[in-house]
Length: 213
Image: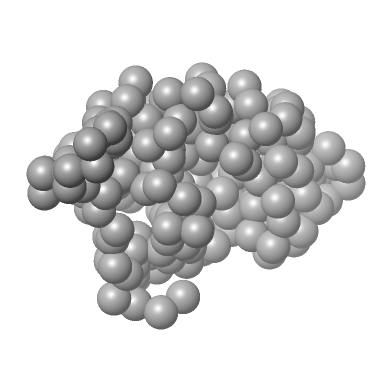
């Protein structure tokens, strides 16, 4: 069975097979994806994947407690680093978000508890048949974005938040034709030879996003 179409070549294939859609509950790993998804804004995810190890090196292993203390010297160092996206606003947002991360973790006990509250603590199991069905944002990502922005986070628009949710397994957006869909808790759509209509519980469900992109 085929992978999701966007993962036809490396580095996307390995990332798709091993990480994308796997539930993440480690605070540092979640913060890593906040950094990377924010860095992706206006760029392709393939570009960010190719720079991921450079980001890990440049940003001290994605340790928010250390990034939160970055000063002018660190900003200058990062702006000179060709291995990452040298965008002053994105670098400043990463430092800012590390500082906000500490406040959220103190309030909720963990960044994990906070982020997963927007999906009720459990992955949303979608059942998309085509890539065209997969939304760029949903009511859940809208709510996450609004709250993050209210708390002072930057580069956390709804589309970025939904990409974060997809990456960290808050939603299972593998197509039903992809083996990873079932492996991550989804159910396959089975076609019947006699063409009898599938029961309602097994029909494909298309989520309707009430908010325009």
